[in-house]
Every structure is written in C-alpha cells, then in structure tokens.
Length: 299
Image 1: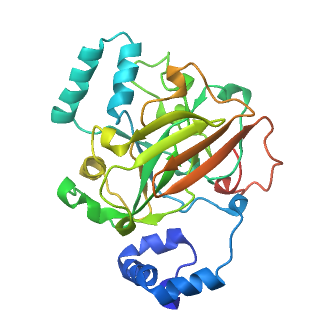
Image 2: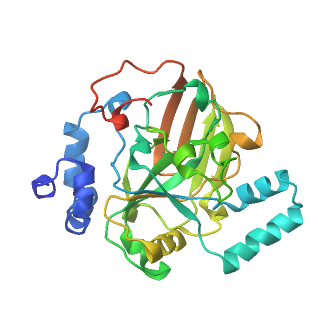
C-alpha cells in the first residue's frame, strides 16, 4: 500500500500518473485483509472537513445533454412537444455533443456553504455525473474513450441564468459570466474508480429543502459519456485530472422561475457515487489570506 502513496500526497497527484497507480488500488479494494485493516484502523472524517476529491486543471461542461430537459426548455420557449422531440432525435442522429470550458476554480467542497451576493439571485441548480480523467487523450474514438476514465463523482453545476445570454452581444452564450464564479461547482464527496461503477444507467437526484427537483437516470442522455469524450478530444487534449461534467436532467429552477436564495439547502446525488449537501447563506465567511483556496470554503 505504501508504494501507491510514495510520491503522491493527494488524489490529484495520484491522477497525474494513474496508469501506474490504478492497479495497486485495484489490489487494495479487492484484498479482504487490506479492507479489514481499513475498517478496523481507519478514522471517520467529519463531512465538513471534506474537500473536493480532485482539483482539475481543466473543467468541461456538456450543455443540453438530457432529452427531457431539452424538450422541456423548447416547449417553454414556444415549440410543440412533437417538434421538440423530433429536433432532439435529429440531433442525436446527426449532431454532436456541445461542451464548454469553464474555470477550474469553480470547483468547491461537497459540504461547504455558498454565500449569495445580491447579483447572484438567479443561481440555478444542475446535478450531474462528473467524469474524472486518468489518461491523456487526443482524438480518441468513442469505442476507446472509456479507457481515459479514472473514476466518477457527483457535481452540482450551479449556473447564473440571467448571465447566460449577453444583450450586448449576438454571438451566443456567455459561459464565463454564467459559470465562472469560484466555488459554484460543488464536487464530490467521493471519487469512485471506474471499475467499481457498472456500465448501466445511474440515477440522479437533486432536492431543494427536501423536495425533489430533479430525478432521472443517465439513460436520458442524448449523447453518452463516451461520445462527449470523443468530441472533446477531437478538438483539444484531455489530461489526467481533468473533469468533464456530462449534463443535467430536467427540473431546473429556471423552468419554475425559482432560484436559489439564502436559507435554501440542496442535496445532489448520483447512484453509487454519494450525496453532497450545500447550504446557501447571506453572509460570506470571514475573509482569509489573499491566497485563500476557494475549493476549501464557501464562495
């Protein structure tokens, strides 16, 4: 077990050489004696001390990748259900995934509070299956894309809806303004190795103050995880430690005209990967030093 940790002190560092570390981890989790020692000698860590399981160098987010969510949004925008369904089916057959690059310092801890400032009162939730990359990938076909994955985790891709479209620019969405605020992508709590996650649809759920807002499975994806990785690596290089969020199902606050406000609590979960909890508050925590790591505290 020591050989796994001899030159890496964090999961992020382990991921940079995942090819070498993957097999020792496999042996540990399949060795009954090793697991018994962990159960007997391991110490429980309070959830409020948990950080995000990794600190990505690059963070990609798939947009509009759940069938029901895209159809719901199109109908609300004036399309018919039949037209919207046909458009989604056509995109699946003839189109490609749409992914955007967002700042990696968006990543926050899975149980840290988030302080809402007045201009952030259109903040919306998005529970997502997040993929953590373990191998360098350039122009990797979908058939081999699974080999890039080190593991999976839970993300809540919080988005400022009123900042997505720029009234002064007619060239598309502004992902920097709408998805750039530090701490607005709670990640974790766990990084589950890919070999422990079965290749079947996984359930996703997000609750707001105990009420279910989003409930679906990855079977509703328009493009599979492998399709998204193929698309990204066709245009740029994925590196070990990068994180790819794969889209969010129907049930956004925007469809209900209900956004997050101080006093709210969301819980985001993906089957087999764990559950995170975020409380939204008025006041920002006391400022620390200028080099404060936003991943370790609220926004």
